[in-house]
Length: 379
Ligand SMILES: [Fe+2]
Image (cartoon, rainbow, N blue to C red; front, side):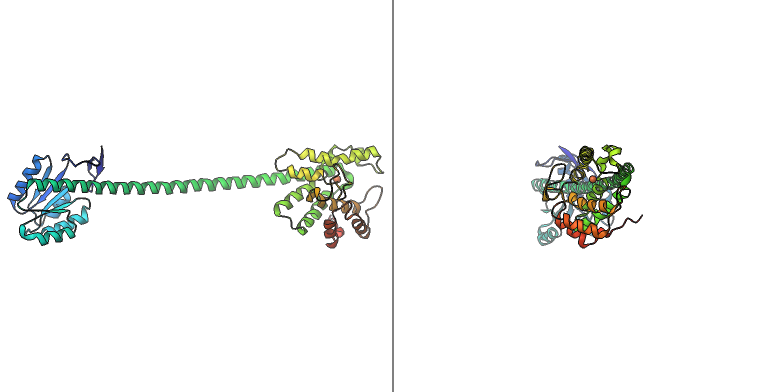
């Protein structure tokens, strides 16, 4: 059992699927003949309905507005304002309240016309109590269904509105979260670049002979990467790997690292350990796993004669093969305490000789064709 609200915002008892009862129900009777009103009033009051009566006339519309009702029983033929006018007024202003018309025997055609204009039913005068009660029961049922339907529509509309609002709020929250994440990611990226630059400077500070090497490597490798049509993400990885490729040199004895003459076998093995060490330093760091693998393989040779794993051909990471070409060129071009940097013609010859053995022939050819061996440090 529940209560529903009608056109007048009154709470009305609603019992789904049962005949309507008379509790709290108001029936408005309009008839200019007092005896008719009296008969109707007697029947309805006996059944427990609240009854409002009026003889009609010019003030009827105000009275209808001022007197909430569930059903209107209205005579058709009346002086001043006739029943059809009242019917139209009620249909327009009290959509859920059924109107039952009262008609004389000769008014059948008018009654049919009233039904077309929205009357719920009509009763012939003189009114028989059984006809009256049957018509009222049906009208109440109809009215309650209309009110209930209207209430469900409103509830549905409210639900839809709250759903739209919830989706909008959730979208706003997600957008704010995305912006937060994007700015956090940008900050992380900046910090990462600064951290990488500090590491690159640390490597150069330890190896006196390779000042500026990391920056030249970055330029040459990124140029090669572009010529190889690498994606932006791959170019970023290549840039980091080229700056940090000799990170493992932090573990090399400075006396060996800065030795002016040729290295002994033992010293060379110690020096060669820098590739694997560099990879190990970075392994396990999120976002650096790929860089770690590239660094560990930057002294592998295309023909499998390199170190530390003796990888061969395309078994060597592409980024490592790029670094190997740029590294070989820059090593030859740089001055050493025991020799001067070699001229471009000699570097070119050496690159041609190493293509296919020490170096990836395709990458070496791109390097040569684009005259990258002529690159000079802007310092
Ligand atoms: Fe190296």
